[in-house]
Figure 1 (cartoon, one colour):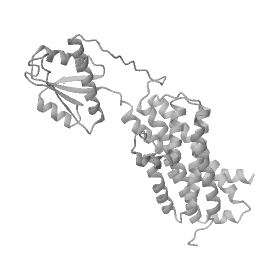
Figure 2 (cartoon, one colour):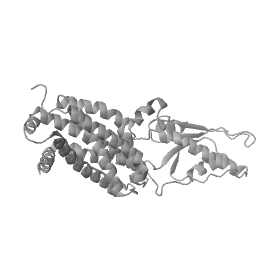
Figure 3 (cartoon, helix red, strand yellow):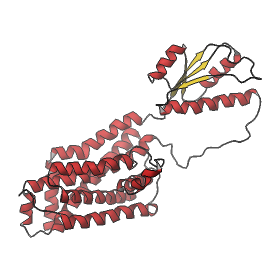
Figure 4 (cartoon, helix red, strand yellow):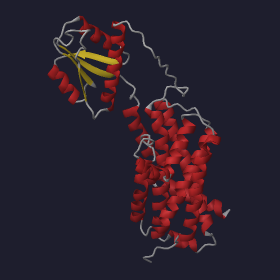
Length: 361
């Protein structure tokens, strides 16, 4: 009964803290809404401007050929206007067919200029698209059939978008933030106010106090996850192919890991401000190296060892595997065991070093 009463008290304190409620529930939802709106149309149309200074049949064929490419918008305009629009991000590439570019064709290769913006991913992709279109037209003109045909087959049952990759990452980041910032700052703040000192005077042992905090935070994490997934599913049509039970297990294990890390921060931080600072020092590198926003498989080799010791990497990968790729828990054994090992170590450290009273007192 004492443990249940402490758990209920922790829940009430969380509910009454409006600032905590905002960062626990509304902030992740606003985050996924913002990123979802920006990136949900990442598979949309590309655009190219054609500067046509030649009236040959080859120029007509190239222009018409580009116009038949699915999801490619083609416009014709002057060179200066087209280049300005490319620099301003209004188009993704500019193809210039100079007067006489096909002189001597087919004995002599036609000279075509392609302008692109190296700072734009879509613009760089246009280089491959235009090359593929022109290669196909060339084979058709010289009547040479392709010797090698590549048949692309997706290993995913559904056509996935960036939002399908992003949602599990944002969910992992939210679970991390709840533990690192929510638990750590709330616990240290209660220590500064003398709440923990008064609890210490009761018969409650430390493990029950930490256990009640863990249960409270687990409930918050599960509600937080349900809200985020609901927003992703109903607003952006995120593909959910995995088992909800498997997902709940991964959420619980991941949340436990970061909750115990939060208690370790609370054990060493002297003030709420220092707890927040420690949370930032630990959380910021994990947020950018843990595969939340983009894949980190192609990161430089020298940073890969750091990526492999970050718990968030294993949580984000496991959530993505279960939610989007539909894998079961058997395939996630290594990810879950690593998270559980970190949880056990952090729990032991927090039991040893946790302080009921502020050093200043």
